[in-house]
Image 1: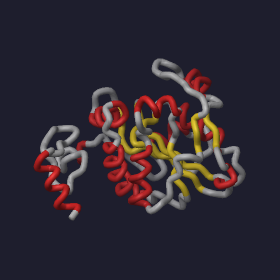
Image 2 (image 1 turned 135 degrees about the horizontal axis):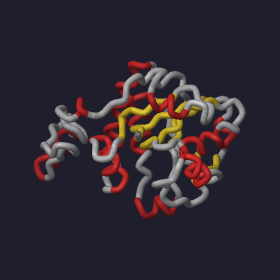
Image 3 (image 1 turned 90 degrees about the vertical axis):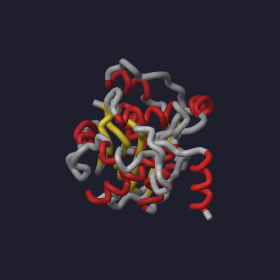
Image 4 (image 1 turned 135 degrees about the vertical axis):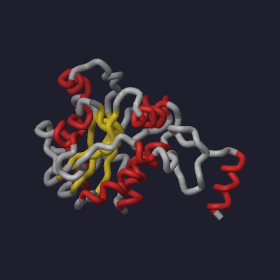
Amino acid sequence: MYARWTDLMDFFLPRKCQVCGRTLLREEKSLCVGCIPQLPRLPYWGTENPADERLFGRFRFEHGAAFCFYRHGNMAARLLLAAKYNGRPWVNRDIGRLAAHELKASGWPYDIDLIVPVPIHWRRLLTRGYNQVHPFGEALSEVWNLPMDTRLLKKSKYTGSQVRLTFEERLRHVDNTFAVSRPEELKGRHVLLIDDVLTSGATLSACARILNTIPGLRLSFLTLAMAN
């Protein structure tokens, strides 16, 4: 029944590849089979991922990785910007599904208990209509059969753009803007903190600072992309 409905929808409103614009087949998602291999993937998702190296020493974590390399104008940037600003959050779900399957070869998801996405402030949620990180988490949850909780971590203060700020300035900008509700539910658990793009690492560091105060909590992180 679902397949027939998809075929009917594709007949009247053909789905297009988000990169090349080719009409997608039923089994294809946001990207066609020709564009999927061209995603600028980062190497070494096990223990030597560049994201792991960038944030090493900034906060306590067990595993860290980013899936793609993000650079102005490249494929990853165009896709993630469309997901964040152009009303196409499902793009992050489709890329997240690719990441989840490919990361399995490197040992992910290890012994992670819970997926927690980086939150956005309610004012941002009101204007954008969605948190672009949630579809990524939904894909990981589906493929890895792990629960996701979108309410445990909250952004309690509104912050503006961090463009052109240094890491130290960004960290001060977001410091003390996150809070954990029901911290007792996280004691002794291995939490995977997720975001769409890792730039300076200030946002992840600010989230990790509050999470790492919970007794017995173990923390890992994963992002869809990492900017240079």
